[in-house]
Length: 131
Image (cartoon, rainbow, N blue to C red; front, side, top):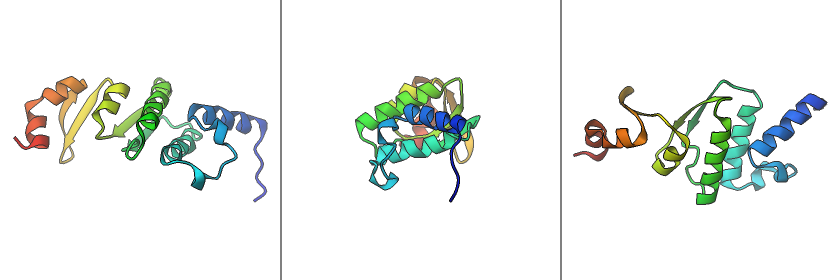
C-alpha cells in the first residue's frame, strides 16, 4: 500500500509503456482498455521483469487487424533483447514476426523451417489438413 516507484523504476515503466503502445493510456483503468491493449499490458507486465524468454499463447487471438499489426511491431522491437516462443494460428502474423517456425504434433517436433517450408511439408499437411 505504501510502495512508491523510485526514479529508475519510473523511467523503466515509462520506457515499457512506450514499447507496448500504452503511454497515452497510463491513467486509464485496465478494465477500460480494449482487448488488444489488455494483451499489451500483460506483455508489459512481463517485460518489466526483463525476462530472457517470453512464452506467448495466441497473443493476437481476438485482436483487430490494427491491433495485430501493432503487436507484430512490438514483437519485432523485442528481437535481440528477448527470445519469444509464440503459439499462434494466425499465419500472416507468424509470417510477419518469425524467421523459424516449428510445428508440433502430440508434443513432438513435426517440422521446422521457414513458414513456406513448413506449410509445404507433406507431414504438416497430412496432420493438420487431414489429407
